[in-house]
Length: 397
Image (cartoon, rainbow, N blue to C red; front, top):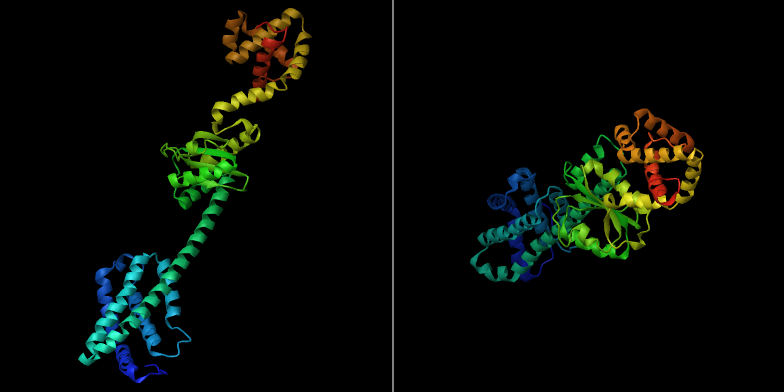
């Protein structure tokens, strides 16, 4: 047994004798604890082993009795154990309620053993000191609880950093093998194979309130902010519609979205598409989310038509270099071709031979420098034909 420095008044003599006797019976304290904790708490379903419980119980009883017996209390022997125990049980994911209740058993067990050791005439001594015994156990419980919560915060902080890193890599990934999507699916506990809605916009003041509403509505909406100026959101398409649904909550925030992309792996590319679109438009006229699949064609036409007149005039001059009849036939044929996308249908619409259609298309490509097999040139030709049909005298349609 350890050697103690004891400072006692006469009235304290019996209490300290009882505490020393309780220390001598620490084995009984441990066995009583193990019996009761095994009946009450399902530690067998956790990482906590029997030897772990036994060692912890022994050290806890010894530390608390040392605290009571030894004076002066410059060093509290309970605190190192409390820090160690709180941290360990948090890492083992033991519920805090279970931990606190098991520590509270210490008082019950110490008191039961103490009453068996005491004599009938010790009743006043027990009554006088019961509160201090409880405070000793409760102080140990509170210190353990504080360390438990501190460790949980450390673990949560670490996990948040890890999830943020996984999300950062995912958003900027160009990984066709979907490795980044698989990682973020596991990290954020979100499904891989479901369709997702993606949304991108600027963090205008209204976004803050929207985000609070979204977060309270669903835990399945993922937010990414690479900087303070913009935001990206994505969520499974089966998130039910309601006041807190992102597309409802963002009704005062100018942003663009794609309603459904194939799966989680498709999210990064979809966000880049929405971002690119939103960066090219004047958002001052937007009041909420817009589905870019419903708007981007119209926008592209408007953007192209903004500089089409000058280009159309140049192409009109080039086409007019042909003789008038040839120019009219060429424009009409090309207009039908870009409208139908079919040589056969164009032949039927123009009532001419297939070779004639091919020659007119070739003539158009020669004088304009446009290649109708090139998607960009073909798209431009569609708009050019629309412009010529309403603004150019050389156009017959």
